[in-house]
Amino acid sequence: MARYSRITGTGSYLPPRRLTNADLANELAGRGVETSDEWIVERTGIRARHFAAADVSTSDLALQACQSALDAAQLRAADIDLIIVATSTPDMVFPSAACILQNKLGVAGCPAFDVQAVCSGFVYALTVADAMIKTGAANKALVVGAEVFSRILDFSDRTTCVLFGDGAGAVVLEASDTPGILASDLHADGKHVGILCVPGNVSGGKVLGDALLKMDGQAVFKLAVGVLESSARATLAKAGLQEADIDWLIPHQANIRIMQSTAKKLKLPLEKLVVTVDQHGNTSAASIPLALDTAVRSGKINKGDTLMLEGVGGGFTWGAVVLNY
Ligand code: ACO
Image (cartoon, rainbow, N blue to C red; front, side, top):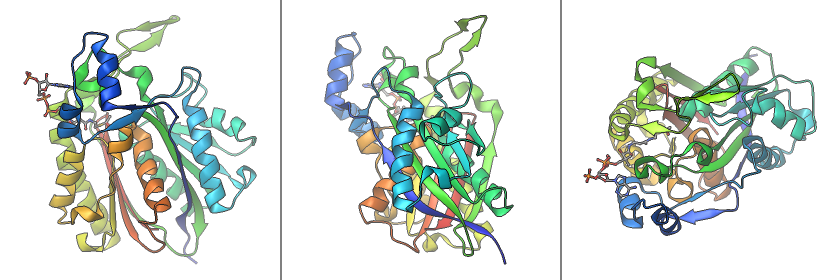
């Protein structure tokens, strides 16, 4: 009998400190940096973001999201036999946030590792978990996207610091006789490293270079709209589906204009677009599972719906997963 993987539970978590655009604009004004709610809403669709407290790490946010995904799947952490965390802001250089998360979940023994594909991290991680389940290497996986991007923001650069926030989302992915994940499509092109990066690195006990986020927003925008369309089409073709078969489009939540443009290119009505970027900004690898969980819990997404998840981010990386929920 064919073996597939299927999402059986979702969860998400946003740290309690919420800053509206006006709150952030006030804080930035104190540093001599000028921005406004009007500019941020009009250019990005973002209205608020959450920032983790100084003593809270990526694995702490991930733990909260995982506990709620496990509850939704009616499983205990001990039932899990694979943990993958997509993150670009891990707790430490090493070990992985996944190993730290495993310990916080109170379990041991199963494989646990991080995937680093920036904002495409969750679709990368989901694809890896799907492949491991299909080969029989795992039966019940926790696939997590978790980030504390507030730690790598340059608050003197208004072109980037207003865009990002912290958060986590998780799914339980289980082996199943029926699909589940129908197809996926992953890509990278390393020649674009410079348009979105944190160029610093750790050497000899010091950070060498600048360890804050740099982005050429317009270059990213142009690349993103192109690859989100091509990757959705490639994934649909692999699954033998048409655009009209998509019930819900859940793209990386970075900028409402990129998301709406993708929906239009796929001839999808905007009602089929899941939007949560207004509430948490760009949370990188966490944004897709955050949006998915929000739409599941609000009753928008129902069992049997066809979902298109799409990521794009630093690397450059991009990819999509189409699934039967
Ligand atoms: N507040 C007020 N004014 C601002 C701000 C701000 N926060 N930021 C920039 N401006 C000003 C600029 O200085 C510029 O002023 P000027 O015309 O006097 O020079 C003006 O606004 C226009 O700036 P642009 O950069 O041309 O604005 P644009 O419309 O391109 O929007 C943005 C910028 C929002 C960053 C856009 O390019 C974008 O969304 N790019 C994609 C970013 C993205 O999605 N990244 C994430 C994907 S991958 C990942 O998630 C890691």
